[in-house]
Every structure is written in C-alpha cells, then in structure tokens.
Length: 328
Image (cartoon, rainbow, N blue to C red; front, side, top):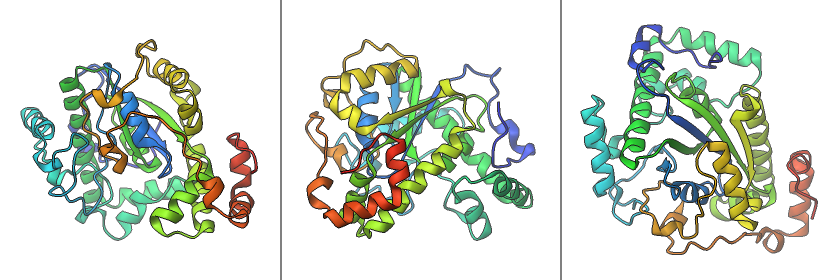
C-alpha cells in the first residue's frame, strides 16, 4: 500500500483491521464537485444487487436528523434501516447513532484551529504534504481522533455491506481529502470513480443554489479537477475510473456496464427502475423524487448569459477541453 498523506497514530494502529484479520471489501470512493450528479449515480449503483451504498457517508455539520428525510421517506433519525445499522455496529463493538455519527474528519474538538486547517486542506504538492505530515506528528490528540473515526467508517462500511449482502461499497462523499484518509484503512481494497460534469452546468447550479458569482463557480470547478488529478497520481490506472455525467445520462446502460466492470460486479445487470429498489441514500433533494427517469440537464445553455458562459470558458477553458467539453 502506498504511503498515506496524513500521519496516523502508530499506537492506535490496532484499532483498524489488518488484511489478515478479514477479507478485504471492495471500497469505492466517488470523487466529484458538488452538483455533478453523485446522488443519481449513487442510486444507480445501489440498485445493483452486489453493490451497497448510503450515498454520502460524510455527515455534514449541522445535520438535522429530526427533519432530514432518508431517501426511503422516513426521518433519518427514525429510519428502521439506520436503527438496524446502529444495532449491527454495536454488536461489532463500535457504538453508532446516525444522529451523532462521527464519520467526518472536519468537526469536533480534535479538529479545531491548526488541526482543522491541516485535515481539511485540499491535497497539494509534495512539499505541502510533507509539511502537513510533519505538523500532524505534533498533534497526537488529532491523530488518535483520526484513528477513532477511521474505525467508525470501516465498521460502518462492513455493517452496511453485510446487511445488504453485497460485495462492494460506494462512498459518494466527493472530497479528495476524505478519500486519502479512508485509504489508510488497510482492510479496504480502494478504487475511485471520478465523476465529472460540464463546468458550465456546475457553475449554473452554484449560482442558482448557492448564490455564487459565475467566476467563483468556475474557479471552484477547475480547482476541484486539478485537486483530483493530483490525487489520481497516487493510484494505479486500473483503480481509477473517470465518468462524465453527460455520458451517463445519454446512454445509462452502456456507461453503467463500464462502471460495473470497473467495480468487478456483474456488468450484465440492467438498472431500469432504481426507485423500485429499497435504498437509504444521503444526498441532495433528488433522493426524494418519485421518478427513475434519467434526463440530461443542460439549462446552463439558456440560463447563463453569453457573457457568463464566456467567463466560465475563460477561467476553466483548459479543464473543459481536457475533459472533452467543447466551447459553446
């Protein structure tokens, strides 16, 4: 296994199972910028009988479990599935409650101040990563907390995979820094799906949903791709698959077949009505939709002005071309 970017506490290494202690589950991390279609892809992959997913394993700060509905429709704090997960986790010696889940590496007393900046900073060049590694060596409390949360994530993956009767787990949490932390778990056989959507569509969504300026949206999208490309260098080609959202929407059967082959599951499974499969997805509001229709959203072509489109192409033109997106 390659050396991880973030140091972990050697004294706490026994908290994570070794490959000899258990069969390595196939762990797949979905990396993407927000508004790239990760919730849709989570549903499509979760409809495969050999795949388990709960969408975004990262539980965001301020997550209101009393009002947030699981994709099954129940308030997630009362969802029978998540209660069953809690019982299974308890049986494995790792208490867990979706209301207070410590699955992220961004909140809590051990991740404040310098520790927060070190853990949440996007992956960068070798000099920065060496400095990050050295700085974390001076923060034993943070390193121990990283180990504790790695164990929670590992046990959650195993519990959900076993309950689903699956062989592959997909985490759609999107952030590359989280991937590099989870990759430290030696019992995971880690692969990556890099989901990409046209930066003009992503920018339009950021403007509409977050009130961002066009320039901010374009810079964020381009930066996320550069960050992903730095992480990609740490994986062998057979463990990294780039998927364009547009290709998935235009020909779901062909693109899902390609993804299933990458995952090592039966590529012949046809996902026609992913809503017919019971799923418990954490993600954006489309998780509550009743339709299984897959439709390509290209409203950016009419909702962005010509000047706004040119601004995106000026800022992120190199990235648009690199991923096969032509100028408008």
